[in-house]
Amino acid sequence: MGMVRRRTRRRTMMVAGGMAYAAGRRASQDQGYADQGYADAGYDEAPPPPPAPPAPAPAEVDVASEVERLSSLHDSGALSDEEFAEMKQKVLNA
Image 1 (cartoon, rainbow, N blue to C red):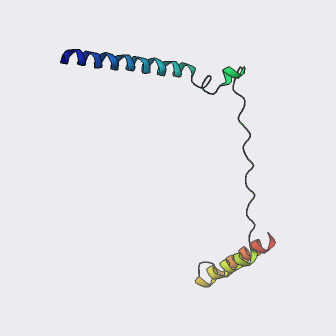
Image 2 (cartoon, helix red, strand yellow):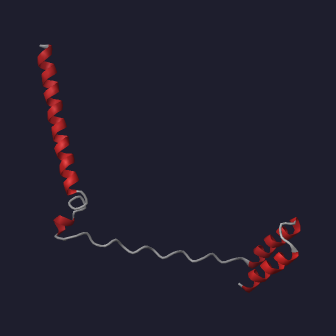
């Protein structure tokens, strides 16, 4: 009796494995076309992707906070007098 059960289980697993193999093979052949439903809708090929959204606008620079940041860099010695004056002019003219 034990042998019959084992064969039945083995046969069931082989059938299930064969079905899974066939389904995977079919899906790999139809990949990208039937999966997205374009063939059913009557399209010859997939429609083009939607356009990308526009790039975000650059953030507005807060002039006062930028000058304060440059001033703190100048006070700490990270910027020389000439570098501080040059960067401050760039911020004020922007």
